[in-house]
Length: 168
Image (tube, rainbow, N blue to C red; front, side, top):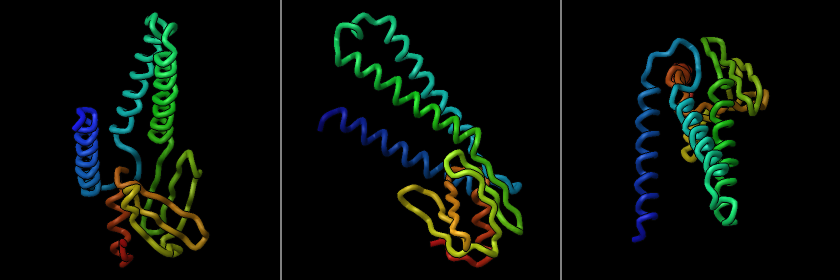
């Protein structure tokens, strides 16, 4: 088997194990009624930014970039791809916030805005195994998606369990 395929499989297995471990650890943490991303997403954004800096330096200091078209395209792809990745990580880390109590939940993301809903209006809760998040559907038609990597999501799950919602 090609070494790049083996490396990809090992990297994928490590990523799955890491996400499963972090999700379980975050679920069991005591919660004060807040939902937010942990430091891991900030570190991922900083790593992406570091890779962008490395690619920008290669763009200006590596003479091959200017003579070899494939290297030029690769460096531009690295700058754009990891630049977008860094922006998405920072947007999620700094903007995604939520609070919940016995009455309801308020959740804000840069992608769907702010949603304020009462628990009494909750219609269904489903777990998406593909995205590793809980989908909360309310009577208003609004949907709140809670990632298993959000700090505080375990408290929401306990609240839903108290309300005797079936976590499918």
